[in-house]
Image 1 (tube, rainbow, N blue to C red):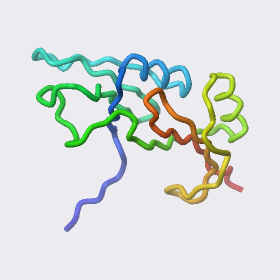
Image 2 (image 1 turned 180 degrees about the vertical axis):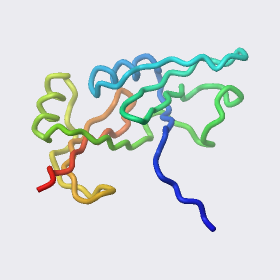
Image 3 (image 1 turned 90 degrees about the vertical axis):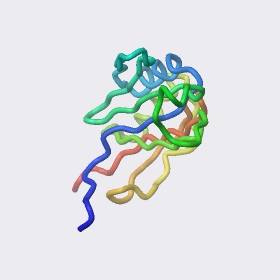
Image 4 (image 1 turned 180 degrees about the horizontal axis):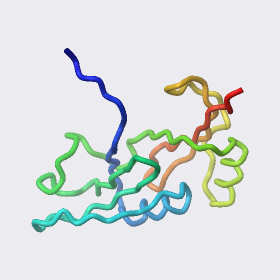
Length: 138
């Protein structure tokens, strides 16, 4: 019998500058920055925590012996979608106040649970960041 996946716990994005990226995600998206020391002489890990999920920030040039990760790594090659309870117009206003350029939106897109409204921007590495909300339940 196949297993059933129930949630996403964390993911890893490859970045050129861990501190720059961590501060951008903290400042623009309100994520909590946490540093974890795995010990055994390994490089400390920086994570972004939000809700019950986290994103690990991996330096794109990290030693493969130090980071067990994907075979092909490149900063700026990720496409991330985050959910918010804020209306798209609030997202637009917040990004403008944060001096973050909007790539597209608000636009309607297909999400995991149906149609959502999305606003797109880019993080410091050029990763596409989609900030989306589902319409209120009627």
